[in-house]
Image (tube, rainbow, N blue to C red; front, side):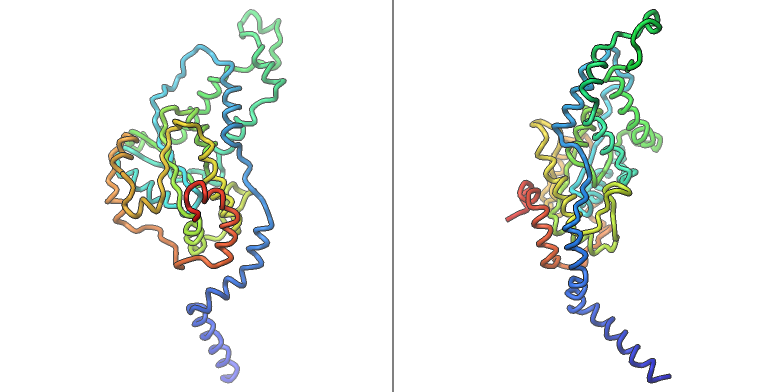
Length: 334
């Protein structure tokens, strides 16, 4: 019996040593090659509108508005922190922002549900030309005419629809923050881009936006080393389960911000600048109207997952192909 046990013990011990040595990395990379190249060949992207489509939908809804003032005043001034996907440092910046004790920034609430992206797509798709014309030409509803006029497609004005959407976000995110004693609220997300930012700006004209980016090589290295497994852009349809899927998500978000018009209220912050002391937090807090104590948040190391010093050759190859446009736009390509 002893002769049967000893070889298996030695094999297990040798394999355990090999996994921890320089041999383990190439072996794991070689084993993952087929799966990653299959994932590269498979293309399943999240369907989201671009900024132009969303603006067209908003304009269509705004063509027929009532003269009644909104019930919710435009004094709501949320802060929206949107990043180039996972592991870009959004949680670190979120913690920096909430050093202002009057501000609560929610972290990816119902993230996999993507309610904001779904609403943006709904508004962008809007109505068919036929239904839009029926809506534009409908008579004003009065008690005397309801029983004798065409009311099959009777709809409220567009600004009431906008007010209803805004009430959803105020009730969902603003009121709970105020119940907790915070005078101002915001949201951090890793799945939203410029189209969703345009939607939120339509609903909250006083909102401010922060776009946070990090080099996709470093984002993926941190993500891969974390051992999180699969993540969802939107559950259950769009799963990020490959290098290519991760890079496409990063690239889509990075490129989207170049679609915004001049004067859109956002600032771009690079993770690399934030961690090397190159971000002017005094200017940022003045622009946002808050008080920031960045030293307090930066002094604590929370959530670090990267183990490797760099990703391997085929990971760099796939990312450089799938995210090349976004890298060039944001200054991450040589």
